[in-house]
Image (tube, rainbow, N blue to C red):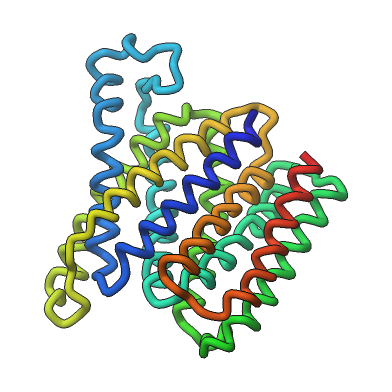
Length: 298
C-alpha cells in the first residue's frame, strides 16, 4: 500500500512542479514562495482548529490532529527550516533553468536519501533496487551533457548549483521525515510545518524582498500560485501517510516520488516548448527504467 501511495504522490508532485514553473516565469520568487506557504497554511488551518476545539471530531481518521507539546513542535520547527531552505534554492533555480533540466536533477535526490537510509536506518536494497539506483546516477551525468547544448555548464552555472543544493537539503528533509513519522502523526507534522514556514517567510519577505522590490523582477499575481499549494498539500499528505507504515522504506518512497519528472518533462515539452528534447528523453527513459527496477525489487 505504501508503494502505491508513493506513486500517487509522484504524480501530484509532477503537477506541483508544472504550476511552480508557470508561476515563476518572469515573476519575483520570494512573494510566490510566501503565498505558497500562506495558502498551504490556510488548507490545514481548519484541521488545526478542530484539533484544538473539537479533538474528538476527527479521531480515528487520517485527518486526526493530536495535541502535542513543545518537544514535538521543536522537531517540526526544524523540519520547517530544512524544507524552506530547499524551497528557496529550488525556486530560484527553477526560475532560471528549463523544466526539462530541473526535473531530472531532482530525480537524483533519492540517491542521497538512499545513502542516508543505509547509514541511519539500516535499510538494505536488493539487486533490482541497486540497478534502479545506478541508472538514476547515470541519468544525471547524461543530463549534464544535454544541458551543455543549451549553454548550461553544470560546473559553472550558479542556478544548477542552486538546484543541486535544493536536492541535498530536500534529501535531508526526506530522511528527517522518516525519523518524525516514527514518533509523530502525519497530520500534525504537515499542518504545523506549513504554519511555521509562513511565520519564517514573513521577515524574509519584509527584510529581503520588499525594500528592493523595485530594483528586481516585479511580482505579478498568477492563479497558478494556488495550484502550487493545492498539489503540494495533496502530494505531501499522501507522502507522509506512506511513510507512516511500519514496513515503508524511505529510500524507495523517495525514489518513486522522483517519478514526478515524467509529468514535468511532458509539460516542459508541450507547454513551455523547451529544447533538445530527444537527448533529454533518453535521460528520462533511464530514470523511468530505474523506477521500474525499484518497483520490481519492492
